[in-house]
Amino acid sequence: MPPADDVLRWFAGLCLALAAIGCLYLVTSLVVVLRHGSRTSKKTLVPEPVTILVPLCGPEPGLDARLRALRCQDYAAPVQIVCGVLNPEDPAAKVVEKVAAESSPHNIDLHVDTKINGRNLKISNLINMTGRARHDTLVVVDSDIEVEPDYLANVVAELQMTGVGGVTCLYGGVAKGGFWARLASMEINLHFLPSVVFALTFGLARPCFGSTIAMSRETLRQIGGFEAFVEQLWDDYAIGEAIRGLGRQVAVPSFAVGHVCSEASAGALLARQLRFARTIKSIDPVGYAGGIVTHPFPLAVIAIVCGGGPLAIVLTLLALACRIGVGRAVEKRFGVASTSYPLVPIRECISFAVFAASFFGTSVLWRGRRYRIASDGTLVPYTD
Image 1 (spheres, rainbow, N blue to C red):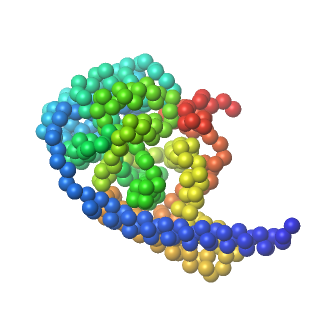
Image 2 (image 1 turned 120 degrees about the horizontal axis):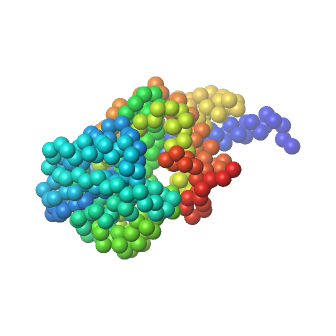
Image 3 (image 1 turned 60 degrees about the horizontal axis):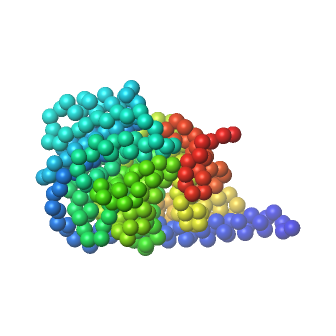
């Protein structure tokens, strides 16, 4: 057995190599983020009636403002907004009723239906809501998404492009709360958003996000309706793959919507991010494991602890500078709020801890219920 010092030096060297690759990844991400969408030509829009479906569950800070933004879209055709809840006592229902009573260009309807169609309660809600849709163009929007007045026009324009069967949207983090909400939004803006842009640029991913899923009613019928995804944890990804299975593209416009982060505690932050991490791991285990190189700062710190010497210190500072550079690129390109840069080292260590923890177990906490992720992405009730 080799001496402990030799093992530590070998491990430090491995961490240094991975951190160096990670710094190169961050520099490349900075460049592709700044260039993302720079060659996108302006789309021609033929306005057509749209139904926006917004599944709701529980109280959410700022929900009324987000619903008003959907009602005030700068869009020339009729827009119907359907908000659905599974519980008539859900606090979100009163928010919808309040917003619906206000004068606005587009109608908003509340649909209450207690029927549970499967384990994925969001999809169950959507199944119940779809019968209320009056128009053939459907746009599903998560309730924590903020949009600009031209959002709907841009999404429908993408959907009208030749060969496109669905549209999804990138999203940036918007903190609506204190310390933990800021850390949650930083994870999106410093890690998630640049990694998706990197993957799209080099053809490494085929995303579809709950931030937006737009498609025609006929496309929804052809992929089996929402019923086909009612047991899936990663329903948005599965819907995108089903659309591609029809031989059509899922377009990703060059702009980003806002994803509101309102985590009020460390537990809420870690539970949500561990669910997200384990979801991604269940979709692409090999690619997810390779994502270790996207954490150069904590890898360099580990190398310091293991005796990596001056090179480890240099790489630690370089990795931190590169991550801050990526954050500034995201701010400039997508217009997200400025990052709390003194918190970046904390955010980097939490991200790495969640990444490591995601390999130890398959359970996730979602909407107050604990599930286990099966190998095919379906939800299984968790038992100890």
